Amino acid sequence: MENTEKKPKILIIYTGGTIGMVETPNGLQPFDFSHLMDNVPKVGMLGYDIESVQFPQPIDSSNMNPSYWNQIVKDIADRYDEFDGFVVLHGTDTMAYTASALSFMLRNLRKPVVITGSQLPIGDVREDGTENLISALQVAAAKDADGNPMIQEVVISFQDYIVRGCRSTKFTSTGFHAFKSFNYPTLGQIDLHITYNEPYLMRHDVQLPLQPFYSMDSNILVMWLYPGITEDVVKAQLATPGIKAVILRTFGAGNAPTEQWFLDALADAVSRGLIIYNVTQCLNGGDEQKRYYTGDMLAKAGVISGYDITVEAAVTKMMYLLGSGLSKEQIVQYLTTSLVGEMTVE
Ligand code: ASP
Image (tube, rainbow, N blue to C red; front, side, top):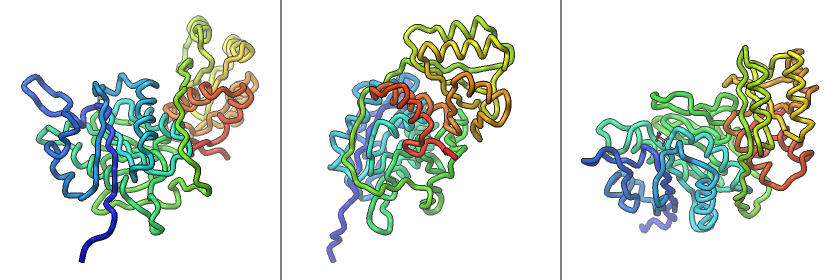
């Protein structure tokens, strides 16, 4: 009998990174993704309908920036209705930033956007790229019991796990299992079978058309605190021309020095209109500004709590809100609201 089931239709967007490289006489070089089947013939065994696009010049993801994010968003938005899912191949170094950025920029996303890459190139004898690519394609094609996409958000699928994009962090530069979500359960497990942690997947009550966003504003500063940081260093950073917001990397549960010069410098920055967002240096847990006197002093100086948000999500959420043409009051309100599942607000 003829199989009438529709083949999953997936668009691969190759941005660069180790995954798409092969050994050539001149060293590791990106391969042409229009020849994907020649380089990764196993992909054909999935029986999917796959198309691919690639950056004209594939990049090392250390060069990622908002204009490349715009390109990825456009590639998805332009062909959103045509495909069941999207797989973005990306270097691992800034993958968690891109996963976070796309979570905010692809507003009303209802289809899977699965980002993956690899620690070793597909062209190496021993490598993790083929498996990561094939798993990502399967995740992008997966349906739930009602026939809807299993994944309706941006995720990273890497080695054994599927994690929410805006909760992800690269935590090892050498291990194959490179990404973790420290503050939110993993969305799925890739072992003999691919299983999904369904209660934690993003689900939407209303279906809205995709609304791509292209105006990230990167006039921000990330200020990392450490014992002994000097007044000059703090003041020079807070006086950086053009910045509109500061991600303050604090200690533990969102704490910082209570020396008067420090609190005054923050209060002065806030009175000049800067938005200061408290994001702990700890990978696990988050800030509870009211828990300790040292954190409470920050709240009194006008610093806004980022709860358990990752720095990657904080940076990209700030760029998104600053670029949205909102008032300062609205930005502050959204910073303490979970927009796409990026933080746990009690
Ligand atoms: N430096 C590379 C990149 O992020 C590493 C990788 O591909 O994983 O593009």
